[in-house]
Image 1 (cartoon, rainbow, N blue to C red):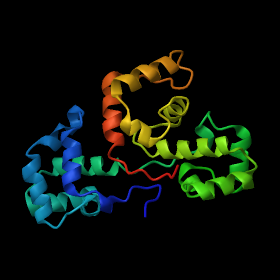
Image 2: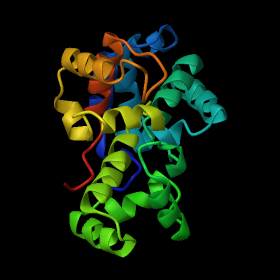
Image 3: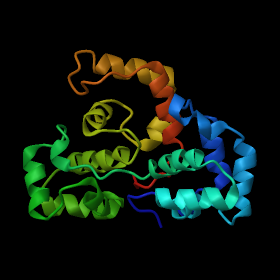
Image 4: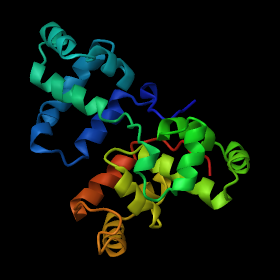
Length: 225
């Protein structure tokens, strides 16, 4: 059963390896491509089968050092791999940082102790529960759907509240739609919507959108629409 956080047990090493191979890495991450097949085979030979096993094995820098000495793998490589693995876990985002959520709704949620996307997830994950929750809050079905979509796309890496607001105001307002998007079209559409930087103040390029879609496809769909 999925939750807001990534179930690392469902991603095996082969899928992680292909993800790394198909990602345009930063210079500091290029070490992950060095002898990647040989090194991943070595990881598997030490009973590491999935992301969960890898996260547990490389839990701390000290553990990276221990594992490096045990396997002969470079410690620097393991530290960068650890950083990559940890980066997939969604961040908890504070709801009051989303300009696309009205203050009235923020206040209603806050009274119930719902102040971040992690807590909100359990109320919007399933369609039936979501509609009942909308009635309890006395908000519209459109508003509760927006909350579900915000929670959905906020699970993706590098989606800040401001970038989520831009996505919510576009046709790419769910993880599934982002996964299916053409990166050229996604880039053009978002640039047009954000031409006055009304929603997102930062900069993004065509390559960023290609990376974004590729990255989104690594994440399981968890919100029921």
